[in-house]
Length: 423
Image (cartoon, rainbow, N blue to C red; front, side, top):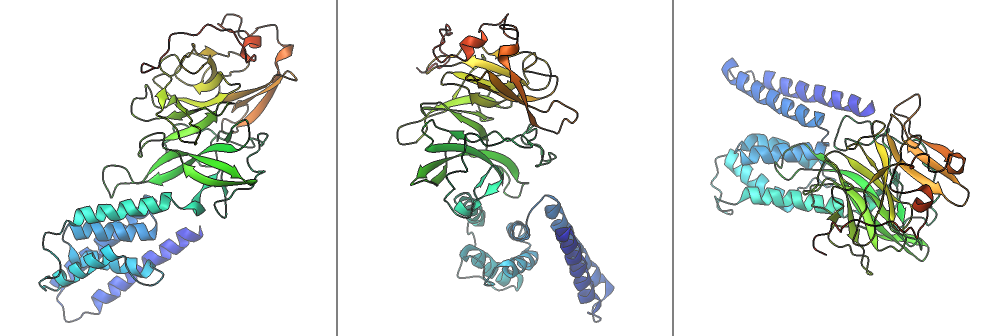
């Protein structure tokens, strides 16, 4: 509300100042005043359009200044560059912006510009400015967000990455590029920890400008980050390169031995909207080329929330297979080079709502389902169950695996032919 009020007041001030400026020029004729009013109106309209797209003041002034500069509307470019200067703490522009400002100033005054070549590659310069700005933003350690918790520096408290963190109120998170989604109503998968507790993986959502159109609306993408525990503190937080820059990787889960990282991505080569991939983790923490788990797991729709319940048993949520409705939970056996067929866990694990993940506690015969079943579709919560109270193999009696096999790390399930064609 405060930002909206400030914004509305600013608009009134801008329009009022422009109107006063025009009406005070009594020596000009109405034929001259009309074009000036049109220019002012166009500037305000341009500002409003970008404001509605979610751009910050600084970004708006940059984009409108650069767009008008490239269109050789030098007076309007100067107007927006001046606004950009006002946003700077020291009232100065960056070196490339200063070059464009001086060039636009001389051009608008009809002065021949001799210090800069007439055919300077301004477009390349502007693209470079945007790339540098994005790189600076992506490398900023003060902006890392983990499970909606902002850290004051690069270090993270050791007790934050707890294997027993409560799920709390979560929310549905697909379609993942839908700007209409309320960010308070999406289920965030938990942080993935290696068995030794010294390496963590988590995903973070961020907005970035798309590959095509430097003045286009920002798009939401998801990236996976790795954190290392050093002397009891979480440090060395860095993005792991798992997919191309303009695509998403999210929902990481790591094998108990720490050698494989499973995740969901919409990168090129996916069978559907989001597919589940696996990447090998080297001893130095670097990750190998991601490999698609193939059609035995992935579908033409969303396949999300992979979660390893042991080193070779993966559960995930899919909306592309026949099931109870919405997202259903499936289970599949995977090893280093092979993958089995995905099995629907059936009712009552799955419901007619969205079921995101399942966890088993084999020691006490307890488990839980993460689901939005209940009175409200927007309410994500845990549904506890005891699998020893069911009739034996009730929800898997016609499937490939029995419950005892699923919970047994030494399961003797026969695997299908490897889907990794390069191995």
